[in-house]
Length: 258
Figure (spheres, helix red, strand yellow):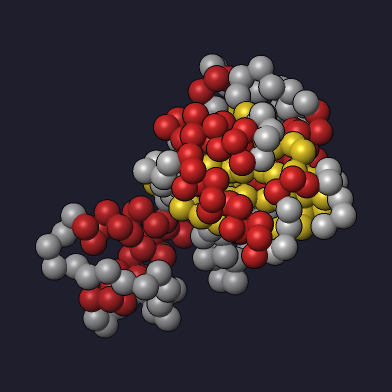
């Protein structure tokens, strides 16, 4: 690849890590790997190098790296890996970094890096007032004002871990495919679990979004992102926009400010 000024963005979630590669504003590649705390610096470096090689991209073309992480155990591994394999000292999203938004939280340092990054991208792309719902290990609901202020939000158990808890903490309930059933009245155990999960979780999402929108005003946009963001989009008109690259775009925007 001719351009030797590529930006690598790394978003470390509790379950999954997203890696993006930008040529200026264009997202060239997007990979997902597990957020394993058991990988060594070398294992992680070699894995990412192999991803680059699969697309015939030279790691030497990366000249800037930005990372957001909600897994503290991986921070030092990521820092060592990027310096050893990419010869680049990474920029971390942490207190003190320039984001371009005001955080109106009781203690701004408590806000997860991923939530701040989403807020930056959301306001840049869609303006405010805005609600961002991110379906990850936890499902987060974040409110941004019409002035671009991060106001706070809500955190709920994620769809995936809720389903896991139900099957792991019960003796006879089986693991089921996360699939919307045709009817709320299940005719077998699998359909009954699916009905409880999907209709129950839909109620959770709908209730939180409706009440947050009441506080922010009727012109509030709702943007969905994250792995389970497509669960209800065909069934309910919950969202104005869906953008699965939102966090990576936010990292790019923050990198441009720092």
